[in-house]
Amino acid sequence: MSNVVKIREVGLRDGLQLIKSNLSTESKLIWVNKQVSAGFTEMEVTSFVPPKLLPQFSDASEIIIKSNKIKKLKPTALILNIKGAIRAIEAGTKKITFVLSASEKHNLSNVNCTTDQSLSMFNEIIEVSKDTKVEVAAAIATSFGCSIQGSVPEIRVLELAKEMAKKGACEINLADTVGYANPKQVKALFGKLKDQIGNVPMAAHFHDTRGMGLANVVAALQEGVRRFDSTMAGLGGCPFAPGASGNIATEDCVYLLESLGFNTSVNVDKLLELRHYLTDLLPNEKLEGRLGVAGTAINFKKKLL
Image (cartoon, rainbow, N blue to C red; front, side):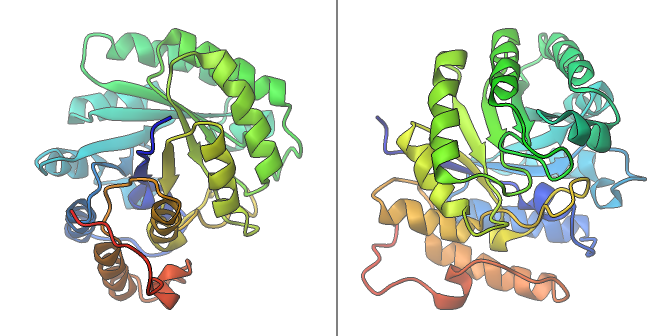
């Protein structure tokens, strides 16, 4: 099994949707460039949602257009419906991630439609993207539980994953939207997911709400997951799910993976430099993560790019 792990930074989307700060387009692009210089090749740089709901993404098209000019970077965007998909494709997005929820109540709260309606919309998006080179990934929110609905049937998560893989998803991402997951649950669900989606790559999106985020990363690694979402300084969360606080911190996740012998191609020192930039950029926000406070251990072998 490969020891190469891809980390996708989602701070410019998931990180910004729950904080009060509204960054300028210029500041966002500085962030993107700094993260690319640290070794990142894929970043979720925006979300194509109604600006009146989330004004921090009103520059979505501009961010995509300018990010596309950055060498070695694949800028991606989150979408929730067909309108967002069309906007993203027209802006030149190389990869879009469509999100639906395994929790009916969360899906209604998040996108105002049932999960089955979202699934039908995913089929439309696949059709719209067929004549383009845009990759369409699928993310299943609340895969491990929901703060609105409570427990989420494992079988429902697997049904949704199988259907979207069959329709053409380039990746299936299971998201622990409210930080309910534990390593035993993660290991069990990803173990079953492999049998449902064949060769379609698996990905994971963990929150560290209850301090289980990195433990869940290890559990997912054991089941063959080699793609993870994270945010710098653990920023973010879902604004439509009560208690959905920050993601796993990118710098902590890279440090964990490299310490375990996995190759992320990321320079940790440059990530910590980026964190200093974010400290100045977001003075009114609480930055999470341990590495930004403690630094690396003396015996840590830093990755040389």
